[in-house]
Image 1 (cartoon, rainbow, N blue to C red):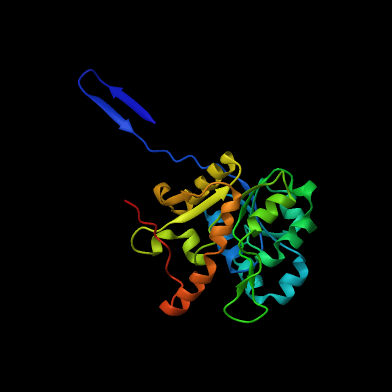
Image 2: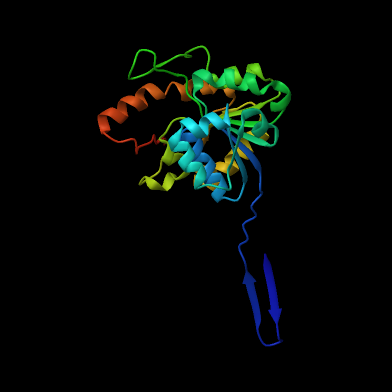
Length: 244
């Protein structure tokens, strides 16, 4: 906003930088560390946030870490998946990749509708221990499965290639590093871009890979990420794409 004031002797130019925050009703699906981290950040940014689980009572009774977190985050209401999704305009999928489709099928196509869904999941299969393998790979991805299963849903894959804390605080690392997005709907990617920027990501460090088939590539980053975690002894690292 620019204002002028003059008393015939002096003219003062006042420039005020106003940040317009659009409040969004957001449901975060999943009560694990990823879901809690994303929900906390969205709440801090002023959004109307709920966090979804299959069974609220069971989660509160059996998941001590989540129950403690919920008691200290009273603005974020815990709801069953269906209720949380129904009341939201935008969804964050923070459920494990191998159970994502089961959870979304339980919510149902009618409830999911044509909402934007930012998918953070990875198809990690722990059935043979550590390190996990990928249960969906090469010719398919969780991002694509969601989009095929719910054609009206606007799926955007992002934030699945890094440590949880880094997702909402990219400045914790020195130097430039990148986050990826991909999806079929440009407007939904732009909405995701705005959310990423509000998390602290610089626009020039957000790489749009194209349509949702590119989630195959971002999900297949996980095997090298896991091995780097072991080699470096820390999860506080990320990928930087350097080009001429």
